[in-house]
Image (cartoon, rainbow over all chains, first blue to last red; front, side):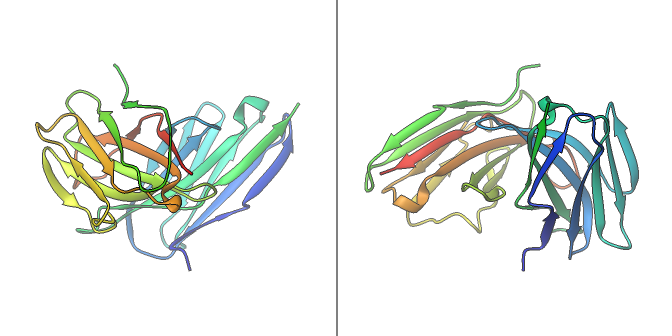
Amino acid sequence: KNEVEQSPQNLTAQEGEFITINCSYSVGISALHWLQQHPGGGIVSLFMLSSGKKKHGRLIATINIQEKHSSLHITASHPRDSAVYICAVRGGGSNYKLTFGKGTLLTVNP
Amino acid sequence: EAGVAQSPRYKIIEKRQSVAFWCNPISGHATLYWYQQILGQGPKLLIQFQNNGVVDDSQLPKDRFSAERLKGVDSTLKIQPAKLEDSAVYLCASSTAGLAPSEQYFGPGTRLTVT
């Protein structure tokens, strides 16, 4: 079982819809990252959070440390949001490595 | 601020050949990472440098992979000899610190195809 599980694996939405991508993890962490990867492109960091909620434009990330769960929300989705969204967790204590989920492929149709 | 640079962007080689990838991190970033991302999977850490020292290379297949960061800035990752299963995107990332949570900045990656 992967330490970081994302759902859904694939998501297709219509432009304007509200999107939620979920991430669950099984280990103690010091931080959780949400990353965006466009086809053929590199990875862009969207958020790094260790508690609560962060907002940037139409993107919102939340984390519940007790439940070991995080969500990434996209409001008013747009075709340019189409990408793979990856959740990664950084271990606690001396375990500083990032462990990545497999990613969620989001396709937003016009 | 310039981002993480990688070259080449694409490489096609035959199995048993050797290949090298280059990474130039963001200026001032002490920590450099090499990841392997196989199609359909999340990135997997191969090696992490703090300045020019290796912090973690536990998942680096040392019989065929090697990496160095001689002056604590640029880094090269080499595969010799390559196998079919090495086909992947090789991502370089850098960050300001290794022990405290910090954002990692990724390069565009090198897509390697081994035939």
